[in-house]
Image (cartoon, rainbow, N blue to C red; front, side):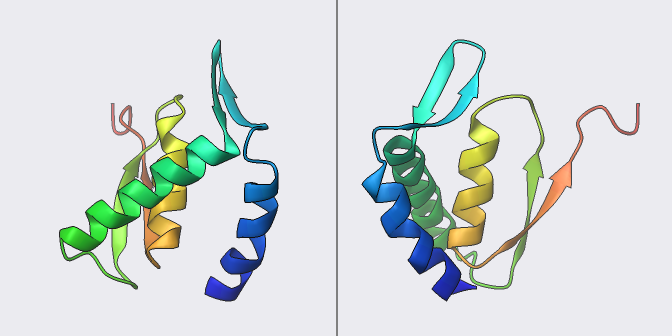
Length: 88
């Protein structure tokens, strides 16, 4: 899994200025997304969340979801999608 991530990183860096995510009028480039995901990865590590852990990710229609998913995966974690509307 980490080897797959390592192979994809040069592709994202080669297109760092290209739009990776768009929500409404807000956009994130690949470079911004990678920087944010690395920041989250560092925060997870600083809090002792290591490879193999499962973290909850609140699924809201916003760009932060992409950062959260990539940050979790970069840290070797799995994620559990959480819907704030369920149960109602």
